Structures are given as structure tokens and as C-alpha cells.
Image 1 (spheres, helix red, strand yellow):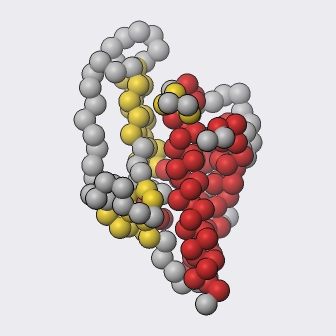
Image 2: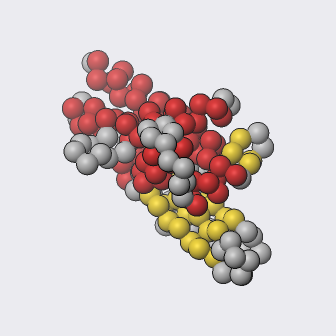
Image 3: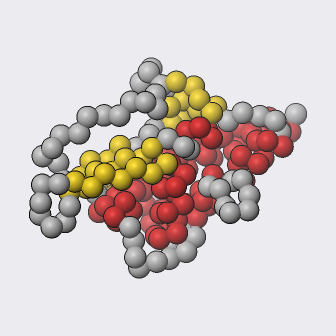
Length: 168
């Protein structure tokens, strides 16, 4: 619940789960060394929720965890889940009724947010995808913080599991 740590967590997630120009993400490299899969439960990747036209902003985050929450999730590899889409539908700022639909993979979204919010770098040119989620509050957190924390919790549990399995 410490949303002020979102930027720090983004930087750590970027190093653990996002490809760099020269290497696979750290978590995936460690999994390969130990020859272990990284199983997670996720909503079916082909499920795109319908969007109502009267919304100014609609965000669809793929959810993943180590346990089923709703009973319909499927067991998939974490690396495949990182390639699933974050969909953001934003009403065009000029007041027209048209929308901009932006789709990024989880990996791309985490990397972009880390590069612009300050977790890895800082840029004052924050893309709509990131700023819209910083402005959208759900309960006591921004949508960005909530998504980052969910990805962080799943990554942490996978990392701990991987290290425990690797010791044997």
C-alpha cells in the first residue's frame, strides 16, 4: 500500500522482467539456469472486455498470480503472460467523441513506465498511457500503482519459489 514506492518498484521490475537490448530479463535468465518454468494463473489471453462508448478512459490490465482468484484463470508461463496486452482507451483531448486505443504488452508497459516515472530514468514527457494511469484513482491507489504492485507481488513470489527450487 506504499504508493510512494511505485517508481522504485518499477525500476526493479524493469531489471527483473523486461528485456534489455543485450540480455533477457534477470528472472527469466535465472529460471533458464535452474531449468524451471515460471507458472502463473492468468485470465485467458483472448478475453477482451467490451468497452462502453460513454467512458472517458477504459483500462484493461491482464491479471496474473500464483493462485486462482476466480476459478476461470488458466495456468500459463510467466514469460507468455508478459506478452499479454494492457489496453488503454482514452478519449481524445480535443473534446471530440473519438478515442485513442493503445495496446502495449505488460513488459513494454512496465519498461515505459519505469523510463518515464523515475524508476529507471526520469522524463518530463510522460506518455498518455502512463499519465492516464497516474491520474486514475481506484480506492486509495492510482491505477498505475495498483498494477505495478500486482506485477511486483507475482514477480516476488516467483523469484522466491525459483530460488527455493534451485537450492535442491
